Length: 535
Image (cartoon, helix red, strand yellow):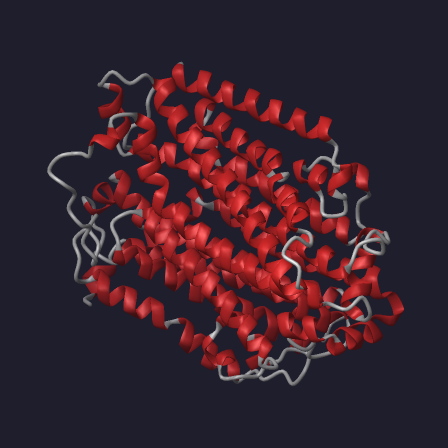
């Protein structure tokens, strides 16, 4: 690398900071809010006896296996123990999105060519993207540390925890930069990053299964709190190891960046057939082809997830920390009438259905990508109407979302029954439980479709609505809000505390109607607006 490769980095830092100022702000605020939500939740659960509650959790074999042992039995320790996974995901996803948006996405849309027409080096955009991501992670780490100090935590431990999270965020920024170099489109780069996050979570769980202090803690960023031990040893020197490890993906990304052309990837795309298959004779077939890879990845992940949790659910005992914790969620005793295993699989399906709604939103977002890259103009030049083209993607997204929920219910019911020794035990209940999540999932699909049809540049607002629903759930579990406010979230009507025999069918039908209305408005908006083009 030469010094000329970094010319213009400072100017691009200012440009990217201005362009991503709202995304950075939302990312940081959400991360800090998770600290307070976690703190309020444990205060509501444990109160003055939080130490005893955490000690009880440590004795619960399932809790210890999933989250590992709590390193300190106080509020600060509870935040580290319970919140590190969510905080790692929040910082990791934010880092991925910002790096990819300012590098590969700019290359796809042609903005990078305009930037390189000015005095800007080969690595200027990548360096600027990593700089602003690093700044965001550092600010988030500092604010997280100050938040824990405000809650009564030890100053040194708080800053070690904040620094640990900052290094985790930077590691995934490097993963995003690496994904950008490998393939020629941003969706693949995001897929690589999300896959890395998923692998990180799995490795962290495996480390916890081994007691929390296996060799995996050194190579799993989401387990680095076991290396630095905030509030339980405060090994500040271990931060140096984490920082060095976190730079490895970035170093590889720079090496690869020097060996590719702008807009290209190290791994070349496989050329297609000289003639299209007869199966691509309509827009729906083409839409399915575009969604197929993403859908397959999600399907594999969901099957593995639900198979594991369904298999262990029947083995749970109604005695101990896990039972008391689940029973106390929301200040109710809703789990007393159902077995703990059934309750646990209910919560697992509920949480995954929230992520399925995120999948539906990303699937609809494919519309904007196809439009900005100019492929829509070529299709609309044929005997294909705007409504037909957009509808094909919406149908594919809806059917894929429904298939994910259906398969989750079937696999969950089968594995739960096999583990319980009776395949028919709970199968239909679990299947119905999973499929019933479709109306709220379609609401988020409809919101994204509406924004795309009317205001495609404001599609990020859809993610704001999704994050608001997640925050409502966390606030309700922490008894910060009551059920009347929780009902703002579409998922409240298929909540895990509602028995499937008592589902509000009228409300679910109204959700389906509302999603249809939102979708129709989006179709109408797209029919009457100009088609987006590059730049």
